Image 1 (tube, rainbow, N blue to C red):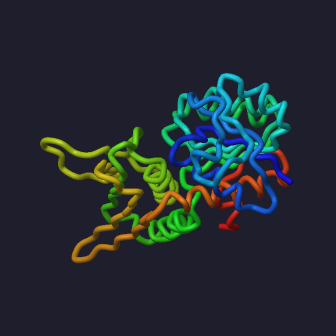
Image 2 (spheres, rainbow, N blue to C red):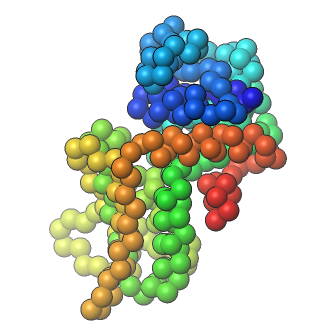
Length: 263
């Protein structure tokens, strides 16, 4: 049985992850962390009934992970918190699933260094859905043949999302740039802004949109649009739990969803 710990267990994603852990025959919730609601049963927030696992203060992360003998920690919180908490978990010998977006290069350097130094395994991805990662593969293939076309990325999310552009949009941009040999990114446009060879990235924040991503390849007299739409955050939670089970049987290192899905 795999012992799983969850950060942000009272939030939208965290509660869904807890719910999906309870549906797995091969894993169990060992610890749940938050910045509030200490002492309350983690099952209350995922609506699965009492689980006998109390919400712990994230400030006690290291000691609780050791006490509960957690095998893997799932983190879909915010960049600043992940940059602090991931190294603590790695130091405790706990594997990591990181779906936090908005991480800077400096934060990734800290996180990656802790994972490699402490010889744990981790899956780090801006998108844990199967369709989202197939989307990246399709975009890569299209870019091979359409590199001379104007390329734009448009993403839309709910009005409470903190980071922009989304991690998925930035990953799509990276996939395209790697394929065509480097692209300058332009984030939106304003004023006199004639188009060059740049890659435009645009973010929409409105209502309760779960997640839309479109890559537009536009040439003379034609265009191709590749789109991925998320209808529920459940797809991310299911992917994270699948990744948690997978990563515990891997050699130390940093993996992506491509490794899990064989892409």
